Image (cartoon, rainbow, N blue to C red):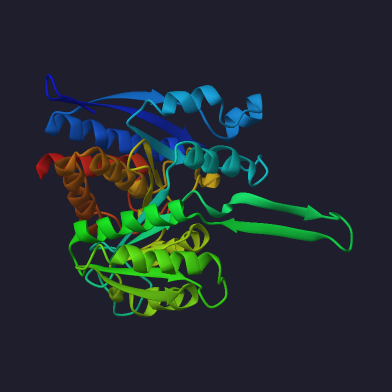
Length: 361
């Protein structure tokens, strides 16, 4: 936050290093954050939380209410990764990640899909000019609410029901965020709604009607629609068609992974869980990668880019741009590969190189 009396820019940042290689990549992001603060004069206080698999195995806790109350008082959350091989899948995801998004009302999942110079894409004849769009995913509703249940579980007549919950409020605020972002980007000014109106006739009727109604307030934004299966193909065949894409929770989860691959892989993919009126959370997309833990071989670029997104969200625009430019320098001049163990440098050395270029630039 900014102290209006002194004009001092000081931020309270919650740090959740998490599991596996999370602490290693977060350490490099914090190294970059420290350099940016020295160059541009803002200050920050770090509060570390040991949320994740180790805490769960030790105490049985996932996300205590007391921690949620403290997180609500911070300016941002910087997350490494959540996921532990000794914890059953779903426990940490539902108990920490989905719970945080819900309780902090982080209703936007923001995923830039941008191919940087020096990064290879699996798409033939495509380059940085072709891959530069953003996916806005609704982040608190849909199938991920967990509504549903079983009938006659464990029998041959078992029925499993999973319901997608979509509210007018939730849909509209997500769409408005996407329209505003499209204006702010000021590129093609085209917003694409991704859905499945021909099959999911109730949920996406709501999405489609609201999309058309809200679009009347943004006459400068071109709008179009595509089924999710078509978008899955076009992200690969014609990524240059897209500027901003908006969609529901589940489809967003799927198509952003396609986006990560075409921008070079999980090693460069960062994302944000945004509450425009509250506390937002920033993270690398790649997961905890426990097999690489402690080996100093994991790629920290995505975590550094998540730090960049955090600073942009806090209003530190110059710092954010500097970090992005330094990352591009590392990608074009130094890194042999984005893959763990094949980068040509260790995790900490990549962080050092980003810091070096920040000082030079």
